Length: 145
Image (tube, rainbow, N blue to C red):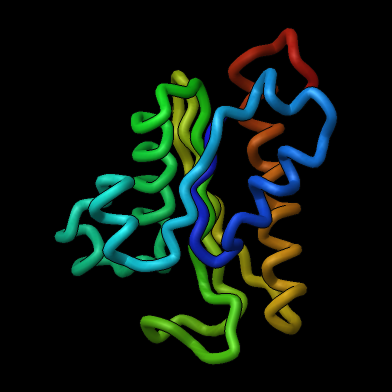
């Protein structure tokens, strides 16, 4: 698996690699905090950003697909959203999207989180890990979801 992170700034990668043996499943990730990195490194189309913004389900999906393609992994997971302290793209603080891309399906999950910046990042990481476990469990029934 691989990660593409915006608002979580590497916290998702840190959570994944905190587990002993992570190198057997986690290849790497990209912290794409700036829009330019989302488009130039992850391949998020400029027109998608113009139409939907970077705080969107569409951007989260494009980021997940982009990091999966970039790294050649089976699963890509991405986070994008507004951790605060102010709104972004007319979306309130706590609006977060998790994008997931696996071998046979892709989806985005919208979160509405409350709290300060650190709590929003922590909640985003926890939700991304749950969503990734669910997707892996659905796509490979031999593994626990």
